Image (cartoon, rainbow, N blue to C red; front, side):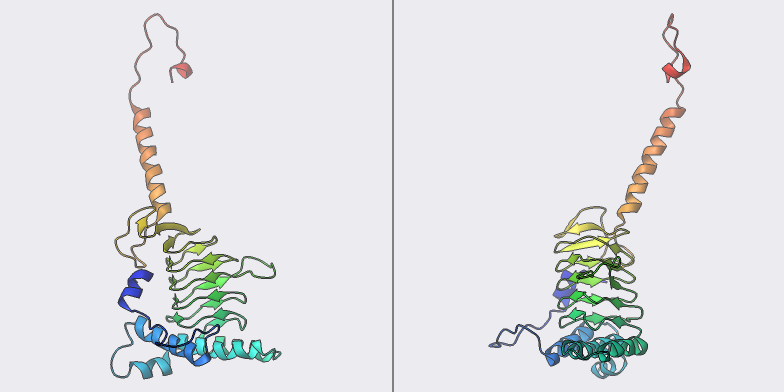
Amino acid sequence: MMAPEEHAAKYPQPGPRPGARARTRESFLHQVAEDFRMALANDPAARGPFAAIEIALTYPGFHAILLHRVTHRVWRLGVPLLPRALSILNRFLTGIEIHQAAKIKGGLFIDHGNGVVIGETAEVGRHCVLFHQVTLGGTGKERGKRHPTLGDNVVVGTGAKVLGNITIGNNVYVGANSVVLDDVPDNCTVVGVPGRIVIRDGRKVASPSKTLDHRHLPDPVRDRLARLEEQLVRLSHKLSEPMAPPPAGEDVTWGEHI
């Protein structure tokens, strides 16, 4: 997997057309087109002359987002019961649960998708990538805004949990199986349980990383345990050294000598 900045460099996302007016709310077709382009750009399996047809017909992540966009608009119209029923149908068909009230901007790509959960008050920025088993959830029974807000160009790795009313900045990479409970500023890499920032603005905060993929992300907990083990070994060697005898003529007890 690539870091968000590497991904943006390799797969530049199309900007607004020249002369196009700024829109306060993206149109349905514009969002769907962005979703489709993100799937085509991010999935290395989607190649060949029939890649577009394959995505449109067989990608559950694309289907889930498409159905959510319909469901969300029905929910905004104030139609009772139907939006909830559509979200349950979406989960049944795709294995992806997206609450009808969740706000998702254009260009979301859900890879594989099985087990992804996006909560009611979650907000997802443009050109984000979520892998399977990702949860954008809450931390309790509190009311109001209780789910995370993701900025633009955020990558959330397999099995990661982003919980609570927190903000994940732009260009953030969340490592696989991480649990993020606090705000994360822009341009960071977060790993671990609980999630810790290990790279910020291109500089390593903790241990170095070979490549930004699921297998080689830095592990600050493992590094700290290794340092503690080294200190324990040094202390053990020091205690095992023979002790010098007390000075002649002095009565030193064993406890005082230690």
